[in-house]
Length: 290
Image (cartoon, rainbow, N blue to C red; front, side, top):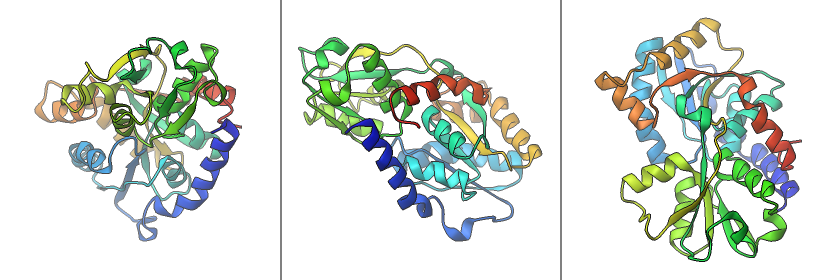
């Protein structure tokens, strides 16, 4: 799939899925904080990870916190832009998409300390694949088309290695999520895959993948990635409450440890839109953002 085709499909997905971002009845509901996240893992896993955090934010803000899964990455972008969601867990690329489409009206509040130097991994089961150049003529799965760590940055590093995924590979697929990419590689559907290093490590730790069979053959340099974002029209006082709640999470307390462990974070730190300029430049260079 060419970058222009990817972009067209993203725009089409935006139009088709905007109504799925949140129930119409949830719009402008007083006393409710409507939260979602890019669907880079299974919906049940996203909700499991969010539950303790949602309870914590409800106490910190005095609001009822509702988590609404979305069908795809485009729906998370449209949901926040169109005020059907109040806060979203974005990847770097989806934040850039939302910020560009809203003309700078998206505010990134916090990111994990790990997101200051996030990385992607390329995995394979094939003994003959040991470096990016070995992917020529092979099949590769990215995650979602709008994923920073599962598509944009892996594509960017491939291009830097003089490999154009659209012309130098036999076939490029999009699994839709990081865990699905691992399943595709493990199941022999593709020769290799690219995904978020955090999800990879979680699957290995949970014994859901055998690293002796499916192995990492390339790890990217670090880059800025995920953040929690809100729309600029959110009251500054509420933005501060939410930001302060995240910054107060401490792994030395039982509650803090549970939340941080589920979020795979050592701590949360403040962030700003300028941190994602390199992501924006990479997206434009790859032809994924006009």
